[in-house]
Length: 187
Image (tube, rainbow, N blue to C red; front, side, top):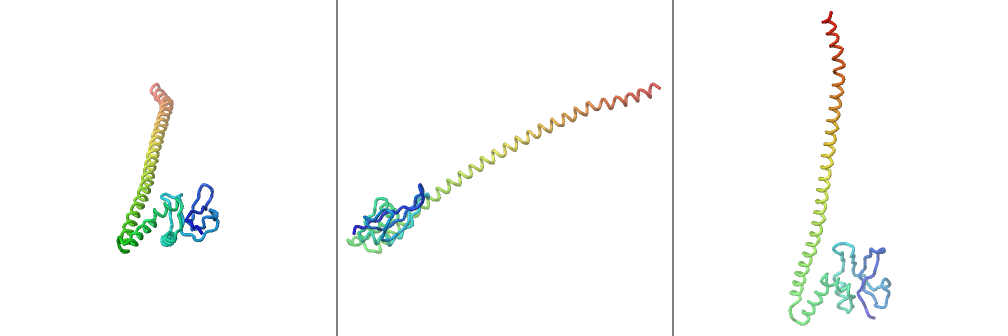
């Protein structure tokens, strides 16, 4: 039976995620499979890959043929590198302890690269948020200054109108007083 390691599609339209499965190559894409060895979600950034490393390695050693996408995933997670190192152990180029040491070093470097990308993306999101907040604060301050200027202008107009009203009322009230004084002076 020809065995393939491939992706089985799940999820809704235009938002797919995949199960990484080991299946008979004659079975339908989303149909019967032998074993599910992981998941792959390309919708997140970076893509989320959850893979059972040991099961994937065992199936690879048994002769299961990965599709192109699954081969890229296995390479990304280090399964193909482990198979390569174990080939070197089998040939006698180095011992198994050295192979494990090399694999651990490679995995640490890979994890550091992934973490650096996650940190960079988070930093970009944070800086964009900070920039947006600064722009909003600037707009808010401009609006507050415009409102304060308008209020000051309205207050000045109100004071001018009140002063004008007082000026009009003052001669009227002063005129009768003056006339009373004039009346007292005349008598």
